[in-house]
Image (cartoon, rainbow, N blue to C red; front, side, top):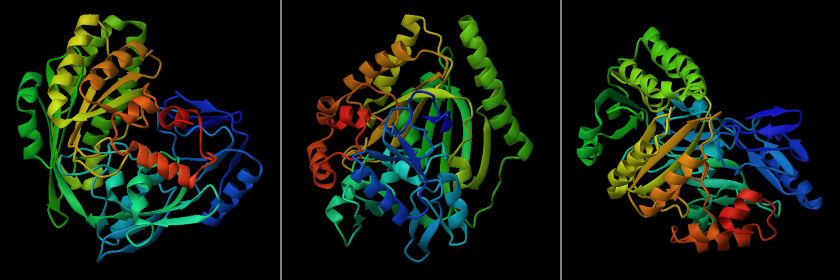
Length: 437
């Protein structure tokens, strides 16, 4: 997220707005005052996190609330694993906050720059067929409603609302506190290994079942999949982290520095994209190490891009992926970013992309200076034909009527929205499109 001349922009430079006013509350009570003031003035109000969503979900044309000053631990219980955090807390700060209690989040996405409330509100997930997305870890939440009132939702208070508010798209209120069910801190034994793409697709479901966490990347114009598999170990296990120099070379020099330059060159000379992708496959993706969970699950990504990601029923992932690879070849596109394939367990969050079904995710990217339209539209058609649901924070074209067909509890969510925000204090154009006005 950046701000220039009073204009807010997201990280991917795909959405921007000049809000009427920016406020930076430091406490939940400060959020409450801001909501009441905005309502008195007839202005819509929204909170933003790190701006890492590619859609307009965080656009705040009225009052924009920055929660950067609302970070930190409210409480942690090492016996129960229950942890309460202020809503603006960045994901990358959470491991340090939990270390003294011997706790960790059960799973993480591969980027940790988001705020906890933003990550939850957009359906951020990691990988691992036995684990749900971040919203599945939520056991409690405190919001400020459109009426300016605190609403506590947990196992004892308003528990019927938890499946809605745990992944609420910012449409139900301003989150001020989040309570997570954490787990004992653990290590991950990681193996990153290239393999023939045909072999990976033929044995994909076996590979997923054999690992606690599994994903793979495929650079278009190559025949190799870069696989990543991880096994969970007790924290008392032996760490074998990557050497600092080796990690810097892989993740800073090659994956970000050199890759940024090659993406830029590929825009000027598209014919260079296939050989560059083949070189990237040869230089990366072959290493083994054991480290704290958050150091394995997350990565540093500084090359700016735009992304579309769809969740399909896990049993449909291979056919959907094959169609995408075929269309890239047929259209002669030069695609500089890899496709990413991940997995998640079914959960009960009403607007979760994994609601009611074990899911696989296929993510496609383009360098931020490239026009993604034709590529993304074609991929979207393929995903929809395979029962796909779009990631709420990533680019897609679906509207409320199309989404209703894909979410069995969609109307139940709208009923909660009508109850908590009947006058649409938290609306914006994106929410009008995906939920209806």
